[in-house]
Every structure is written in C-alpha cells, then in structure tokens.
Length: 393
Image (cartoon, rainbow, N blue to C red):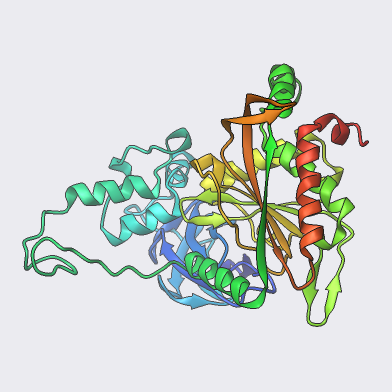
C-alpha cells in the first residue's frame, strides 16, 4: 500500500484482516538510495497465514527505510519512503522488467534463507515450477557450502558429531501450532472412519478425463468429487457445516470448503467459496489455481480466511489412515487417504477393489456420533454412486 505526498510516496504494510494484529518484515530487496522499478517487489511481509510481496506502484528511489528486517509491524503502518522524482545517479539504475521477473522467480522463504546465509540466488538452479528457486534449493546449496564442523566447532556442536541447531519457528508455523493446540483444547474431538470403493469415480474419470480437459482447460482430478460429495452430505446434515460461538450454534447457509494444501512454508487451507454453486470444472480450476499460488506464496489473506468445512488429503503423501484435527471455529473435517487395491467381499465373493479409507473428525459438543456416522456414509454413497450427485438425485 502507498500514499503519495508531493512526489514522495509512503510505503505501508497492507491492511491485515481482523484476525491478524501484526506481521513481520522478512527481507528488504532494496537499500536506501537505490532505484526501484514499478512493479518490483520491495519486501516480503510474513503474516500468520501467508507471505505477502509488497511491490512498488511507481518507479523512483527508496529514500528512507523506517522499519528493518525482522521487525513487527501493524497493518497500514508506514515502513519506508519512495521518491518518484529523485534520480539515483549513474551508479544505481532501475532494474529492467526482466531482472524484476528473475527476482520474482525466487520464493520468499528461499530469499530469506539465502540472505541469512549470504548466498547469491542467481547461481542456484531452481527445482520449482518454471525454474523457481525453492527453500530446499537454497538449503541444499548452503549445506554443500558449509565445511564439515570439527567435534568442538560449529553452531550447536557438542561432543562427537552430534550436531544440534536451534531455529526459530516462522510466524506461520507458530500460528499452525497455536491453532492445532487451540482446536484440541477447545473442542471435544472424536474421529469416525469408513471405507469407500473408488472404482465408480475412477471409471467415470477415465471415461471423460480427456474430453473434460479439452473443454475446460483443466485436468479432472479426484478432489472435485470429494468436494461435491462433501457438499451433498453437508446439505443433508447441516450441523457438520455449523460452528459454535459461545453458547450459540451458528448454522451457515452457504458452503465454503477449505482444501488443505501443503506448501514449502507449511500447511495452508484456501477456501472454495460457495462450492455448492460450482461445477466439477469450476472446483478443479480453483484447486489448481490455489495449488500453484500456494507454491509461489501468492495466496491472499482473504482466500485463507473463513470456511465452514475442511478437507485434507494425506493420501497424496501416501498416508493410509489418520485422524485430522478440526480447523477452528469449524466443527468437522474430512480426511482422505491413499486409494489402494484391497480384497473386499461382494455378493459372497472376494474381489479386488480400489479402496480409500475416510476419516471424519468432529466436535462432539454439537455433533453426536449418529450424525457423524450418517454424514460419512452419505459421503461414501455419493462417491460410490457419483451419478446421483452429478444429477442432483
């Protein structure tokens, strides 16, 4: 955010959401006296949920930095001054758009670690999407450059080769820890399980995936089926879509589904708003967009706020079974796991089917076991008979 006074512009922290009181300045990419190109990222700002890039809205010279790396700042707080009329001199020139794009190809977390270890990211081959430099790339480079410590040298070194290192948690990791602990302390969490035969969904997907991608420009995955099945079950059992506020139960007349996505900075849960009004294609496009921007650190605070129900998919990492933790103030969360061929009994015969174990964690303060079990059965039926959901039967 910027406010212009004459030819000087105040560089301000973006307005934070109501649930966030402060943010942390991660790393200035410009020094006082340096030229800045319009659109160039000035600094990375870390909140409890996401890292925000703060681009320059005009070209000029960064004449004064008021807040330094690592300082805590509030929303809308002035952190620097930019002069749109000053000339930096021949020794300092504004970056070209190509250079700005090259800087944008380095993830914020990677920039932070590179700055701490005095590593030039330009020399690191990126392993991320379209060559982006990821945190892991910088960590690997730092490890390769670090000399092997002697038994009595090196940060955290103790006797022998038993090395320890103390690293502060990021604000996002701290927030994740706080919310998980809050969930366990403030809710009576129980988990119920069921299994689902994924063969009908797999057959439907295999039959139409090429035509689907050709028409909609996005791949037909399994996530959209789980979102659709969850919405159908939530419509039958509204308590699973509700939340507790003091002594009141708030029934939500809309279906904002959080989809957990693992990123290099930790787990994020962007929200698919009004999921009941979206087609499979609309859901897949949103999930694909969220996944790409989660990797690039481009999700907004608004996209990570709210939600009435969540879905987490440990199956993408190979998980067979887990007990997911509720994302407060929501009252339930669905855990999806790896689909594996398993022997099952059908009509007195043992057959092999692609089975997936489902886990539903719920707040027992407002949701009884009967409702939780029936809700999970409704999801199972919606997946085993996907035509009913797609035809609204």
